[in-house]
Image (cartoon, rainbow, N blue to C red):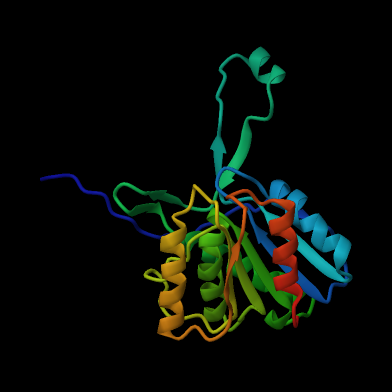
Length: 239
């Protein structure tokens, strides 16, 4: 009998490490999803602190991805003590581009985050109308699927924004009812910018009624100050 690989989802517990501004009585909540091999602290530093500075009464939450990515594994503890922290980055899922297969797909992080967000909203007595999700790079790929998982809990976000990513409309079960926007640097060499624009147009053709695609001139894949500022403008417009 030839061996085969099967992907199954089993219920389990996941630990979320979260960077937050610690607002106690917020009127709005921002969830920030970092890129591959990055962290909640990194996206908070680039984007979250700007939200905290520019807007009042907001809770900013930037969780680490579910899956840690060790960048080194020294066996000598003396070496370990002289190096940076062992676990320096995290991932939300694992995708093999050559075979177009997911080793771990969007469902597990999306469902885990959706259930956690539900408890956060309940603890602050807020509806999902007061929720904005912003994802960068790998976090941007995940963002619409998190929105979809929240919709299944009858929690439709106020806005979902992806930065320098590509929305896999072919994997979404249905067209989002929430506003879904994308911000894309024209000089991005990491993302296939032509494909990401085509995917967004397909979502529009399928019936996406709210949200837009924004090109940023002279911007690459980095979450630059200019990109962050533009994202905050989109996030705060008509909020």
